Image 1 (cartoon, rainbow, N blue to C red):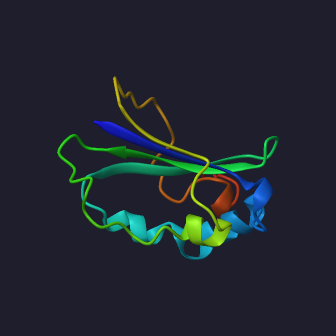
Image 2: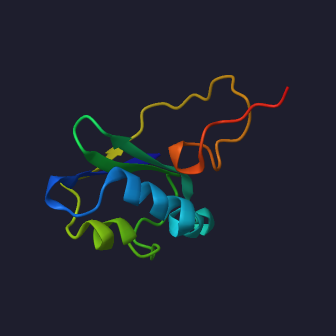
Length: 115
């Protein structure tokens, strides 16, 4: 398994964490749901350092040269990631949780639990 990490320092961009979050909510997530070999993609932010990024987990058999959706983050931010790396994944574990991870996160509002 491989992991790809992309991380932007937004200090040189007109985009903000909030504007990029709105992009995810409106159109940014769905194109990735149909990518073969992508186990998981999650978007990350750090308001303290004004950074935005994504982490993708790929199956070992994934064709990492296959076409991907347009890199809208780079288009919106206006420059490539400050850091981009691909690395091996040594181990993965999924803990006990409340359900699927899809559509959870700040872009989609607070997590709601049923009573």
